[in-house]
Amino acid sequence: MNTERVAELVKEMLVEFGEDPAREGLLRTPMRVAKAMEFLTSGYRSDLGGIVNQAVFQSEANNMILLREVEVYSLCEHHMLPFFGKCHIGYIARKQVLGVSKLARIVDHYARRLQIQERLTAEVAHEIMRTVDAEGVGVVMECQHLCMMMRGVEKQNSVMVTSSVLGSFHDDAATRTEFLSLIHREPARG
Image (tube, rainbow, N blue to C red; front, top):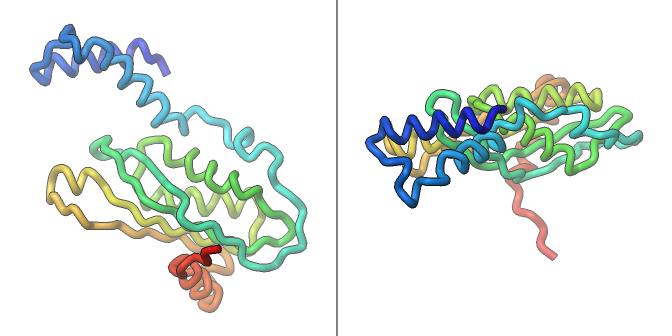
């Protein structure tokens, strides 16, 4: 991404808003915005193979593996405003498991681009399924969208929930029910 070019565009935008980009408080704003957008859209430029980085391990585990409440931050592709919330991931391994931090990194890889929550949920599920050849995968996202909160209908407490279930999570009602009950269970505290 050409951050210099993006900074120039932000400067032009400030003028269109009626602002003076030479004003003290805005002098560095164009480059700050450009660098923020570089980070927030890094999913277009990141290498998923490098993210997983050989963190796929052989395992005879044939049970459900669950990671709950992974923070997710993305940008709505319709208004370029943030949406954020939690992602819950479950899968049943066949012969391979994925390093736990890599699940969160897969979420970030797809979230750090212009998105809609429905597609983001499906992309994460399909990537986990593909990476470890899982028997089944379930992904649920619960997010709040600033495009609904700050503008438009201005609904402050709305939460959008999306799910993607593949393989045994799709085909077997008991597996799907177990996954859904586990993601809403109170965590054990030590």
